[in-house]
Image (cartoon, rainbow, N blue to C red; front, side, top):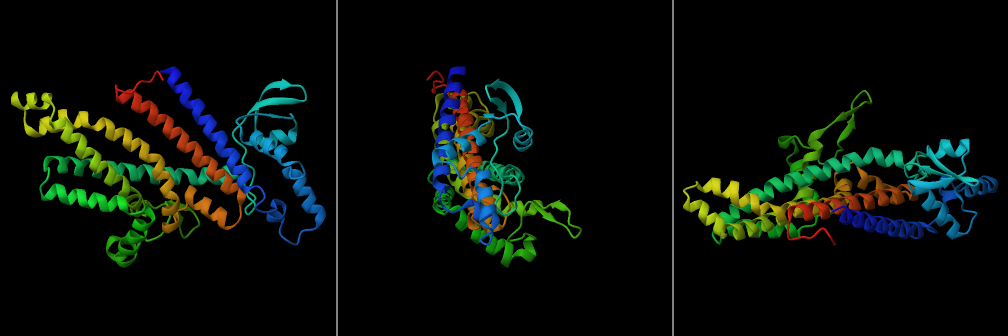
Length: 351
């Protein structure tokens, strides 16, 4: 098991390295960061000073090495007061003129707000995680329920209706579902539902203080959960049908156990293993879909910050948000791999 986990972590690190490399070279050259931070009317001396501070006066490969050093949690810096203040690191080992240090990734600062990118993203990330978890919980409950109902009514009108609805659900992109839900339940029927067609998880009250507005989570979570519901319904139905045909289920009925006892205590319990792993895998996809949903509902999470940064050419925020998302994907996928190996005995964790 430890060897299995170590390999997955190594693969994750290699994936992150590839993402960092692509992001750096993709955004490099899209504009002059010095002018983006200082404006078009800044004098040449100021621009040169900013370029020197950002390392833009160095060759491209040297800039790439500096960026890797900045985003790495284990990096090498001169142990000066300025660096200690800038990176907020913990010295580990002196190596010649530099020191190996431990720090959180330094994603530099926003061109627009001049705030640390890490600070901006850490404020937005919890909102996106809450949205993603709410969507997957909603999708799991609804999907498993209707999947069981469909399996118990195989080939009749109930089963066919559920399957047709699930196919319609999976064929709709999340952003389209979001637009429809916002229009109907947030705008046209807003007076009856009490829901807003736009709004974030936290909003400012009349006194300028942030307040939690849970109702703004409902429509985005439903919109984000519609496609997973369709997958979970069909997978639950197929695994339940397979499980209900097993000998031990027929034995349970022969022993006189009640229908619902057999279904929930024996059949569903064994049918949920592949469903659980699928649900875990969908979490990463849901977080990706949240980018579009957040824009539609003006929900100020990680996706909202990313799209806004791209619109305003705030490249450090956009680059940092992409790296944040990549880390989330890697962590979730490692977790799913481990969970799958634990729950499904047919999967070997030795390879």
